[in-house]
Image (tube, helix red, strand yellow):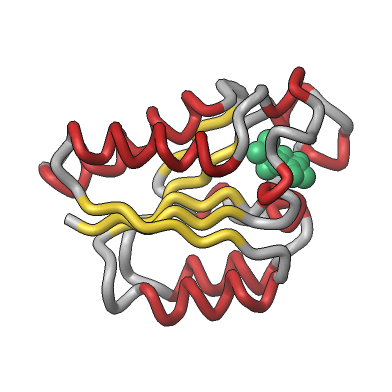
Length: 147
Ligand code: DQA
């Protein structure tokens, strides 16, 4: 199985952001943790980070032909992007929404997610664990779709 991990804007500066919300890891270290878990689960994983909304749309469109499932943290675009939502809705492969922080318990403008109801599930509020739990969930679904 092949899994794509998409990181949205400002996640390239992870490690410089507020550790109370985002933890202390850099993006490279986070990706290393995800890759390690992927290896344990016996799946391939690849990563993209972009600060551009349209790039996330294009990646979702193109990569749908090459991967079995996607983890996406659209960062601030979570709360604004109908374009990313529409791309997730149209592709036929499962997408899981990920956030490091607990978007429900921060500023009111973070409570809304444009993508929540077009994703298979949401994992948030557990810093890097959100990605690891999301990956396990997605792989579990792909290996036994009936569950
Ligand atoms: C985030 C939460 C968003 O509200 C914020 O804009 C981010 C990161 C998270 O992972 O907790 O940049 O998606």
